[in-house]
Length: 388
Ligand SMILES: Cc1cc2nc3c(=O)[nH]c(=O)nc-3n(C[C@H](O)[C@H](O)[C@H](O)COP(=O)(O)OP(=O)(O)OC[C@H]3O[C@@H](n4cnc5c(N)ncnc54)[C@H](O)[C@@H]3O)c2cc1C
Image (cartoon, rainbow, N blue to C red; front, side, top):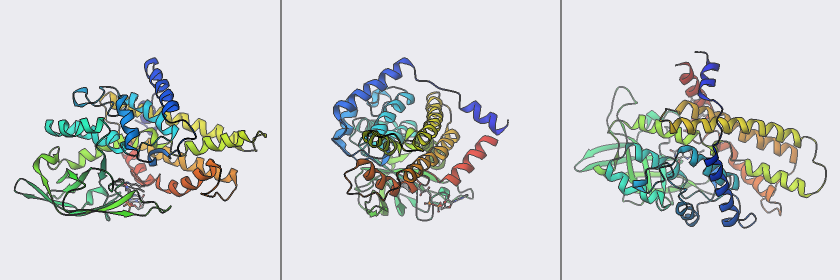
């Protein structure tokens, strides 16, 4: 099959049905009431602030763990319905940081590979917005080349003894648990012999040290694991299946609206403040928004297609990689175009919300094409997948 045909067959046009549109309306009303504009600083996509109380409000409405089974506190709803809710939260800049990772991928991965005991132990807390998770994949010498992780889990009586260092671990300083990819046996094929362990971030031997980001804040960390004992009942899935399990997480991690909406708020606020001036829009603004809306609509359709494929139980890893490759470049392109048009030295102290958002996004945007897999690596995943 040609690459072009392979892409078309994966991304058929997808519309929201009546029920999904009603849900969208419901979330918009909730946000207008609970989080009126002007009463909070909007966050940029999944970098939005953690707010456990806000997460609990979403949980009360059944908007966390939506696609998880009802018997574990979930909503038995679809991945598309979760898409509808998260799209609105991101467009509003809502403070989703507390529950983000657990709701997006840790919950689904525990539901898919976990034991009955693990599901009963973790999923209800995730669905109530109480338990927060971090992703323990990257290491100082293992980012794109994840199979070279050196964190080792050694078999001991009743469990595993873990030693190693994870890096860039978002939220580890405030979250509860870390799903950790580590080597449990040495194998000739590096993709074998890896396993996932659920590690208590506040347990003995776990040291979390913040890594300052460009803007001076620190939301990601280095996590040193020194002789950390992990009982057998916290091994996730089969020993040696960590590579495949982590790979399946990436479909949830890469294909959602957070990969093309990080700079939406900046663009919206730019337009809002220009319109408030009451003068004709400067040259170039219509072209910027025309181009952005066209690309955004296309990405949205592709991303929705990933959600529908996940609902159908299909493997969407390649599709999700394509969405992330295109989506994160789009986010950066829109920002660069706004910077050119605005033509100012934005100040973090400015009275203009647009200027303050511009400062934050200019500092955050380089990370969009790195976190969750770099552009170069995603291209390689896509081409291998489409030509296989
Ligand atoms: C804001 C942010 C949050 C993050 N949060 C987490 C987290 O919570 N948990 C976690 O585990 N990780 C996290 N990461 C890490 C992220 O997944 C890695 O940064 C990413 O996978 C790249 O790995 P690396 O930084 O080691 O770069 P490297 O793998 O060293 O890559 C360096 C450069 O080489 C290129 N390159 C590497 N291999 C190839 C290849 N085969 N072909 C072509 N080019 C290649 C890359 O594209 C890149 O440009 C986060 C990163 C950021 C920026």
